[in-house]
Image (cartoon, rainbow, N blue to C red; front, side, top):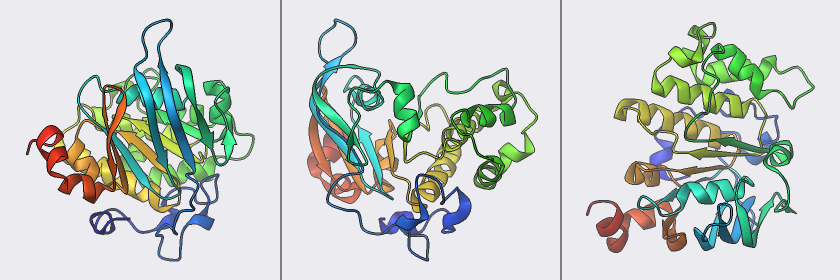
Length: 273
């Protein structure tokens, strides 16, 4: 993790469920992620494709994340950032490339089967059930589980204390930041191997954005890889181990968060100088 990350969040690796598919074997005693292996835990390699019979939006695009890492995808509007996430999750017609999770090629699997394999995906919009309570939303996240999920729910309430206070309230009545916490919590209820977040801070205040980023760091410290798309590029790269800048569906720049923040071209073109 970067020094910036080490100054933020809670170092307690038990704050989420470290015994789930994102296992405590990937963290040391201080809750820091152990070094990643050479093979990325999740990789969308040379992805090419688009929606329906339309033109390709992704063009030979590659994104990856290792255990315990935070990887972010940034770029201008229309660059294909969210499309890359949907390709990884099986929501796109891919004409080239493949998606590999934990060493297994899952390119032909449906989104539902990818969840069973260990993908947790939080879309940018329509990511909660507004008429259900907070607790019912979290329970819906455990739909693939056959074990007792109460411990996981308690850990999510520890991660997002406001959700415990509002657990009996309809999720649609919450603030934007609180709804995002519900959406992330519901994805964590599946005990995912990897967590993918599409614009998790969209429409929230800077204070709420910082709080959400702190919680994301805490989840990564349990060993769960996190891949996210972010419009707030500078802030996202500050917490990122790895960053991808996409332009017209292609990789324009790749590096660590620090490298991209220091790159003059990236700063001038995408970070406002």
